[in-house]
Image (cartoon, rainbow, N blue to C red):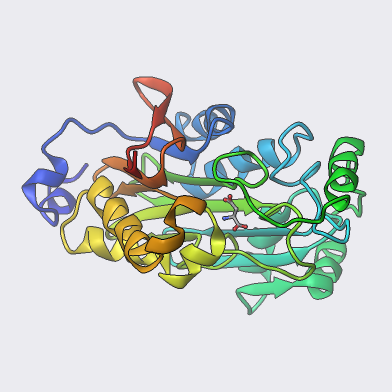
Length: 308
Ligand code: ASP
């Protein structure tokens, strides 16, 4: 890391040994997604390609029931997907409430690169995707349909903390060129209201990148992340000198303070990476892990939590 860049940070931020390139992603499936991203980063590739390719692996995996193909449907039985992507140059692209397309992250990237806009939703996003050559597919697998039919018997919407009826893959990376990017993709909360959109496609909530400072992404109850403009907050706190973990902790603390009465019923987790390659995380409830891949290998780390 260039001395000029490091000198922009308070000493405590870069005092630990840092190693670049580096990629971080949410939850256990982050481990396999990191391997794909690492393949790009270790060959001197761009962080934007690393994060797109990394999360695509999870989108295409029907056994991962909270992202992409095989994702759990909404309460009316529709699989509706949210995703966004952001690069080092403040380019952004996002899709929300998108149906029938296996790789919403790539549609988000196409929005970023090929349109004058930053966000497309619903049918407009689908029409754009089809025009761009994406294939229309049925994303509702037999397993997810079975679970939905079971849920219909009670129709009780109560997202459970850390049980995988939600969970987003959010990925942030710093490449050998010193550039940060991030990607975030999900099928959202299982059995949500038809038309519900969470934090994941909203730049500043589910994802934010500022190439001068750092990047952050989020998982958990999207409504709570949106309420505090979570990832923008985390990056701004790093700008003010917090380490990535301190910044994530302060954002979680804000959710906790404002939602104290229901804090035991919600989960929010952030991961963050600064320009110097230092990383950290924090969550509201115990049970959130994230994967980190750098020159020292790929590993899963359990995040510290506000509620023990
Ligand atoms: N944040 C996602 C949403 O609210 C779900 C999750 O990450 O658990 O749609």
